[in-house]
Length: 417
Image 1 (cartoon, rainbow, N blue to C red):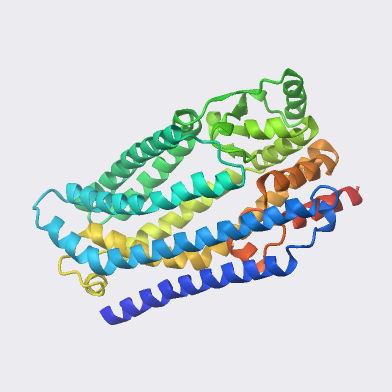
Image 2: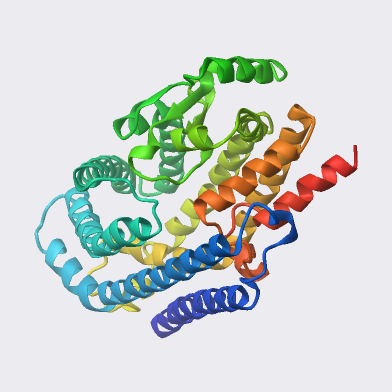
C-alpha cells in the first residue's frame, strides 16, 4: 500500500509539473503566433510599440513564473524526501507538548519556504517591474511590508494550528468537526476584520477626495440603495503604478476600494463604470456565494483529513518512522495541493461567470457599455495585459474573461438594447 501511495503522489506531482509547463508553452506559442496583431476592439487605443511592450512583459513574466514553479517543485521534493524524515525524527525526540512540536514543525517549513522565495520576489519587484515602469516601492517600504507580513502570518498560523492540534488531542473522535467549525468562524472573522484591521497596516484608506466624483458616486449608489461610506481610495501608488479596483469585507466592513492610480488615470465615467462593476459583485452576493462554497468544501476536506491522517501507510510511503499527526497533516495536504491544481478550472470558471454578471450590472446601472469598455481598454494598456491568451491557459488560470472577449460581450449588450 505504501508503494501505491507514493506512486500516486509522484503521478499527481509530475502530472502537475508537466501540465503546468504545457500550459505555459502553448500560451507563449499562441502569443508568438498572434501577438503582432492588434485586436479590432483595441484599434486606436493600442499602437504597435505598446503591443510589443505588452508581449515582452508577458514573456518576461512567464519566464519568471517558470523559474518560480521550478524552484517550488525542487524545494517541495527536497523537503519531502530529504528534510522531512530528519525534521520529524528531531522534533518528535524533543519530548515537548504536541502543540509545541507542531508549531516548530510548520514554522521551520514556513521559514525555509519564505527564505527561498525572497530572491525571486526581489527580482520581480525591483528588476522586472521596474524595467516596465511599474514598481515605485522603496527598499525600506518593501522590507517593512515583509516584516509585517511575516508577523501577521505567524500569528494567524499559530492561532489556527494551535486550535487544530488542541482539537486533535482533546477531541480525538470528533476533532475534524470542531476544527471545521473553528476554521469557518476564523475565516469569517478574518473576512470581517481584514478591511479595517489588517489592510490599514499596509495602506492608507480614505473616502474619495474628488467632490464632483463623490457626488456622481452617491447618485450611482442611490440607484441600488447603498451609501458612499463603503467606497474608499487607497494609496497603492507608493508601491506600483498598476491600476485596479476590488470588493472586500462582509457585513458592516464591506467596501469597494479604488487604487489612487486608477483615479488618476481614468475619467469620471470610466471610474463610475468600474465602480458599477464592483457594485455588481456586491449586489450579486458573489463573496457570500464563494464563502458558502468554501464552507461546504472545507467540511468535506476536514473529514477526509480525519480519515487519512492516522493511516500508517501514509507515513511509511514517505519513509517516516514516527507518525506525529502534524506530519500527517502535511502529507495529506500534499495530495490535496496536487489534486487542487487539476480542479482549479472549476473555480476559475465560476469566477469568470461572476465577472460577466458584474459587467452586466455595470451596463444596467450606467445604461451603456461604452465607459466600461473604455476603462477596460485603458486598464489593459496601463497594466500591459496579454491580449492573446491561449483558451486552455484561460480555462486554468484566468479569474476574469480575457479582455477582448469581455469587451465584445459588453458590446453585445448595447446592440441588444
